[in-house]
Length: 261
Image 1 (cartoon, rainbow, N blue to C red):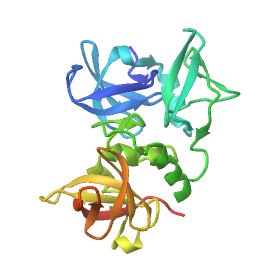
Image 2: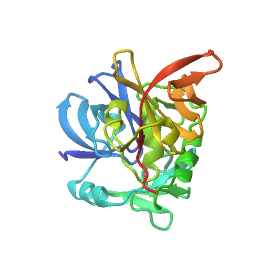
Image 3: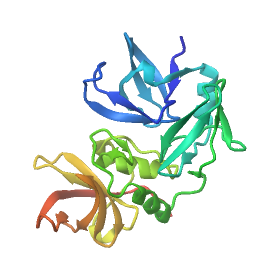
Image 4: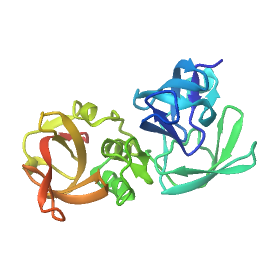
C-alpha cells in the first residue's frame, strides 16, 4: 500500500479522532497531498503536505497515489483554482466534480491534467503563477467576504480566522501554517498599527495573553476577519472595534508582514 494520497473531491474533513463525529480541525481541498502516518480501520492519520497539519481522514474521501506521482507533484510549483466554484471533469469516471477557490490544479496543460491514470479536464481560471503583491492578496480575500464562520474550515462556504489568512496567501504562492498561534511565529513583526499596510496580518490575544484570533489588514484602520462570518471591521492600537456591538471584540497582540514588495 502506498504511503501517500491526494484529496480528489471538493473538500475532505480532517478530524481530531478517527470518527465522523469527531471535531473537524481542518480540511483538505481538491488536489492537496498528504502522507499517511497511521491506519485505524477505515481511517487514516495523515500529514498535509501544504502545512504539515495532522488529522484523521475517512479513506473513502481520499485517493492513494503512487510514490512517483507524489514526488513529482510535490516538486511542482502549484497553481490554484481562481473561481468561487468550478466543475472539473473526470474522464475515467465520466462525472463532474465541483471544486472551490484555492483548490490545487497539478500538471495543467491544454486544459487537462492527470493524477496517476485519472484524466481531468479543467477550463477555469488559475492563480499562484505570479509574485504575490498586496493587491492580489486583497483580491483573494474578498472572495471570502460574508462566508460563514466554520471551525476548521478553509473554503468560501465555511472558514475560520486562521484558515482565511492561510488561504489568501496560499493562492498567492505563500505557505503559512494552519493555526493563528503558528502564523504569529513567522514573518516580520511590526511595532505599531500605524506601520501596517494592506496585506499585513494582525493577531489578537485572550485575557491570558494567548493568540486566539487573526485578521487581514485591508486598508487604513480596516481589517477583514472571520467572526460569525467573514466581515470588515475597524482596527486601532487597542484591537478590533465592532460598531454593531459598540465595543472592542478582540485585543491586539501583534502585527506580521509576510510580503516583500
